[in-house]
Amino acid sequence: MDQAKIKQSHFIYWASGIVSICGIIFEVLFGALGSYILGDGVKQYTLTISLFLTGMGIGASLSEKVTKNLVLSFVYIEFMVALIGGFSSFLMFGFTAFSPSGTDALFLYGVTLTVGALTGVELPILIRKANEIGVSLNRSTARVLFSDYAGGLIGGLLFVFLLRPQLGIVKTAFLVGLINLSVALVVIWLFRKEIRRVTRHFFVGGMIGILLLAGLLFGEAMALTFEQKLYKDPIIHMEESEYQKIILTRDKDDVRLYLNGGLQLSSIDEYRYHEVLVHPPMALADEHDNVLVLGGGDGLAVKELLKYEDVKNITLVDLDPAVVDLANNHPYLLELNEGAIKNKKVEVINQDAFQFLEETDEWFDVIIVDLPDPNDESLNKLYTKEFYSLARNHLVPGGAMMIQATSPVFAREVYWTISTTVASTGLYTENLHVDVPSFGNWGFVFASRDPINLPDLEIAVPTRFLTTDLLPSLATFGKDEGEHILDQNEDEVKLRPNTLIDPILIQLYEKSWENY
Image (cartoon, rainbow, N blue to C red; front, side, top):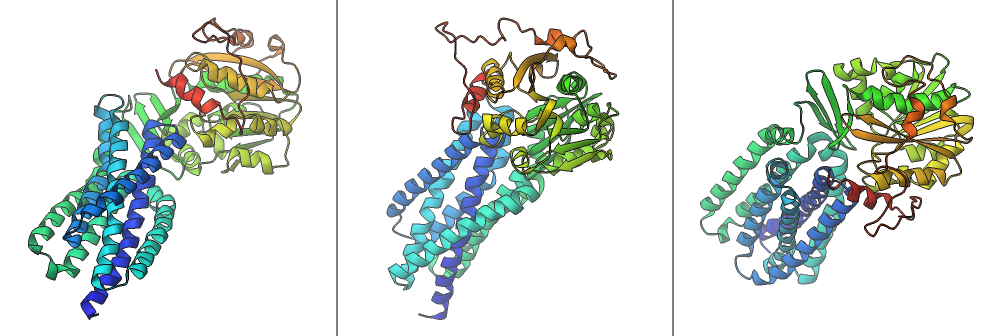
């Protein structure tokens, strides 16, 4: 075998690894896109991975029809992967902002299937070309497949630990597209003696490269204008942390925080939410020495807790350090939470709440559970009987716990399922709800080891909304938001606890919010 063919065969193995890395990055990127824009991460990752693999199968089958010009066929497949995959994230935001509801999902699934099919064509062509050069079929197949599988691992690690946190999903797509394009251009150069009109193919690749490079440099800013359409107010801060997309908007005096597209707070009326979240359990608890806040990285629950002079320690457990950093450093949030997280009484632990409760040996007088809604598997576990049992086991006798539990109006069955789940741990519960204009009617589950008598409680610190006289009225629910839930046949629905083994809450949540 001459020197040129040796170089060609070696690059084929490198190319198989590189395109495999690109393929796996596109695969998980599509899942991340679906999770962020369409919600229900487990569902979207399942669908995108399934569609991508199905596409690969289709592509592998179609590769049999590629019998001539193997090198040029591979080059133009890479051109298409680069162009379609590179612009996928950018166009997904455009579809979400401007197209009718549902078309964004169809676009994502179509792109996933298409890129998967193109990826499925790549390896068979590379194996056949390696064999054509003079490498034995068994040897070429084994080496190309090894490069493919090893590349898959590398691609997954790169996306999770480097690309997504550092570049975000728009820039990542353009960068990976440029890598696919680079592989194609190198192939053109190495096999230039057997390709006709080499200059023409370099020109096509160059045009695609200019588009992708422009997308890498300017696409994220344009995508931000698309994403702005998804939010009522102008975006003043956007970042993609290791765990979620963080958006801060502002219109006049109204500052709003969004996590993965879900509204977390509005500065106009957050006090209504946080006063009900914090002050009833503080009024019930015998002591206030040691308080635990699960979630609440914005610092607003902590601000309410610091109104009690007898509080000695507040442990704030929030998974995402980026949220806490934003609350500690962004001037609008810092003004809103009054620098509460920086108080010397507060200890911040960036850890999964479930894991924290499993590992800690501390007991708490008050536990505030202020976690995002249960719209995926990772959050669902924080609304299970197992989780609330762990919380109960760290609650001192005479202590109290309050749990945000979604809306009894918009997600009636979800709210009362959470209440049923908390009660299944043996805790006494009381159900409260309050109108928060930016959210709507919002519900809480109040829990303790002892029976709760709301008229006996006194709100003893300054508040803007909640009063001692008002508190008992928050336990009154209308007919369309109460515990008795009827199905379409007017039969009463029997609620059951949400558990790790039987995670019913995700489907209930998705069904409840589909019309809002």
